[in-house]
Length: 203
Length: 110
Image (cartoon, rainbow over all chains, first blue to last red; front, side):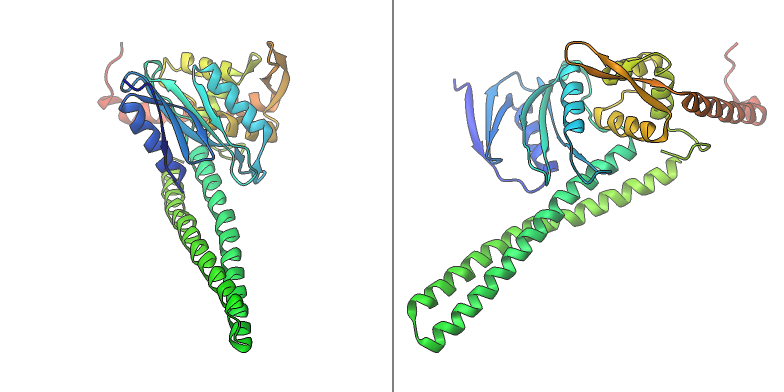
């Protein structure tokens, strides 16, 4: 029987990534490493033996990922019996992937409304940053495509026309990326609004 | 979390009373769980946010570092103790009023 496997998956939302990892744990596959953000490596375990969590290290007050928060979270996670599977380290949204034996009880990283809101704000910020990047690149691609096309038509040059098509194809790809990263912003806005309403009630 | 004379959240209240002795983050989590008989389990994200807010408010301070990994320990300050005292008075008022009005409907614990 195979004891290791790699699955390529692309998720734009951390929430969905966490659901996927927990589904794999339920099936008896614990995550052990993640390459390039899309290749998930698993090892055999007992079905339901582990619970997986993905959290951001972005400090919402400082508006960026901080070493202090990363250190605090990794220390807590290892102290509480969790294993760090993978860490990403980019300012626009560092993450920690961890698993913990289900036998140790519930495994939650944010247990109050304020920290849940802060976590969703961090996730939303990650998407906002990538939306802006994808949007700007898309506009640049379209602009260059149109400029090349105009020049190609004026000069009747097929090579320039080919460059225009390449620019349009890149822009189309970036538009797909833009849509993929912009949709979760609305979902996170809704979650944050619901949590704020809940907090008002609690207060 | 609320302003200094407002209600404290359950998590903040338990964190503050845990820090009458110096403790590091995970020590706080364990102590809160013990104090609440396992009912209140703080997550790392919750504790991180609460500790930063309490440090910013001057209700706790860094006390030192412990263990091989040099984990930061925290301790409550005088203003933190004052906030706990206000909270206890507020909870006492809630309890007294609740008992006075609902007495007939409360289960007898005697």
